[in-house]
Image 1 (cartoon, rainbow, N blue to C red):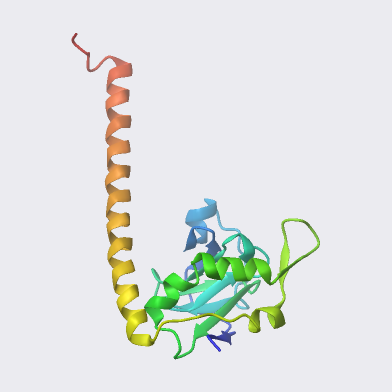
Image 2: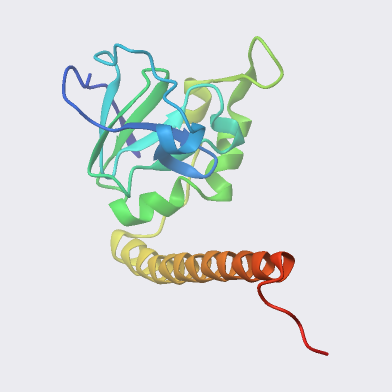
Length: 183
């Protein structure tokens, strides 16, 4: 009742190839430091902002997310793509699919596959899962608060990365003798 399956092939459209990781939806080239997609990506799926995507085999480890930082992209046909229904606001869905409740329900609906790492989703079992959701207005209020917190975390991560870079530069100067410490 919350999601509708979506399967639109990207065809020849030139789009960035994305991957779904436990860190979210990321450019494949950036994440793997190389292009791992096949040379023919016409059968890849087209995803758009607010689509819910999950790995067909690694979903239970958190390889699920909502396309948020990209307007459009291509994703391997091994992934599953969904849109949300009117029972979830788009913003709320973004946080809901990464929540512990969703992860636990996916783990509970997974069946061990060919290896201990790979698991298959028992779709029938998942469809019988019940979620208690707030009304749409409350979902929007919750997602507004979470979005502010999310932005603050991103800014703090940027600041941390800048400080790490500064520290690295200072360490280089100290180690090369360009700067000396006076005692």
